[in-house]
Amino acid sequence: MSGTDSPLPDDFTVQPPVVRPRRLRANRAIRRMVAETLVDPGRLILPVFVAGGLTEPRPISSMPGVVQHTLDSVVAEARRCAEAGLAGVMLFGVPEHKDAAGSGALDPTGILPRAVRAIKQAVGEDLLVMTDVCLDEFTDHGHCGVLRTDGTVDNDATLAAYAEMAVVHAEAGADVVGPSGMMDGQVAVIRQALDATGHTDTVIMAYSAKYASAFYGPFREAVGSSLQGDRKTYQQDPANVAESFGEVELDLQQGADIVMVKPALAYLDVIAKVRERVDVPVAAYNISGEYAMVEAAAANGWLDRERTIDETLLSITRAGATIILTYWALEYARRHR
Ligand code: PBG
Image (cartoon, rainbow, N blue to C red; front, side):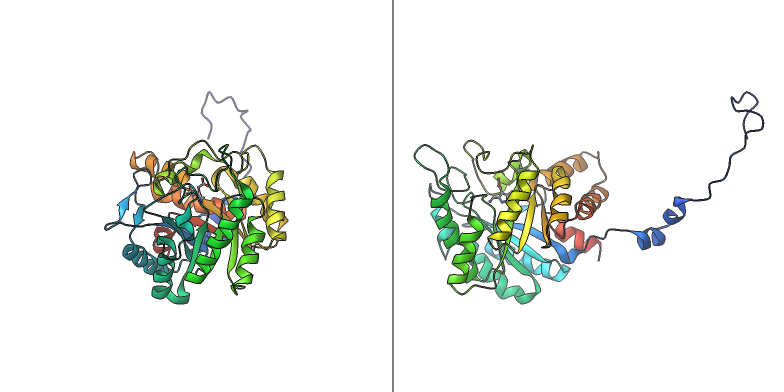
């Protein structure tokens, strides 16, 4: 085997390996048989944006392929999700008018409750309808709560709004509410309000470990938010992981049924560690910036788009997420039927 000027001794021979891990990688069927992780479309949730006052769906430039829906187009999209076997849709409402208090969030005739009603009527029990309980889509300053005169977010005044908002969503027919504002005590007050109004079966999927992330960038365009300042006084510092265990524990004590880690990709360690510590389902949100990065690179021909998407969702599942919110949910489910 070796050439005449090989540096190896003349009597050198390759000892064939006894153990050959490559055997189990030899073809598609065997790779599929030994795969340790499967991404189940029945555990994927598609986040969708529905905007008031639109006549046509409006593209979101930083999220190619994602749009702000009209009431009609969001129902059609939900039908496609049900047909593809997704777990659900997570609805974000974009109101026509925003104000300092985010009062549009509490309007039972607002765009979000109207969308919930219309979708539930169309899909029945085939698809879970979930709603984002947070004020940032509705406030003119873009913060997740109401502000004090000094510009800081008033935790307890915001709780009252969240309680009312969650009940408005539940009355419209939401199966799951997702408090995402990172106010202290938000899960407790929402559970109390839901129970006091007879919505004892409405599920709370709490955005428990939610970081102050640069990766939310494209979401601002998606909900037409011009955030003043940042969210560092209420969302978590990316430097921390133990803090997430505290947040998760608090949400469980307050009645959360499902806990979430968000973002996903830069926080796979957090997903894995939370998974080990709790016995409830763990959701992960594959967010707007994670979507935008892959789409931008793929559009430039720098990444194989479908392989990158599949690997992304596998990695989040492998880290321990039971449920994934991803803008690729519908595409993924259709491609892996
Ligand atoms: C808050 C909320 C945000 C996202 C989901 N819910 C924005 C934020 O907290 O800054 C971001 C989702 C994404 O980036 O895809 N209502």
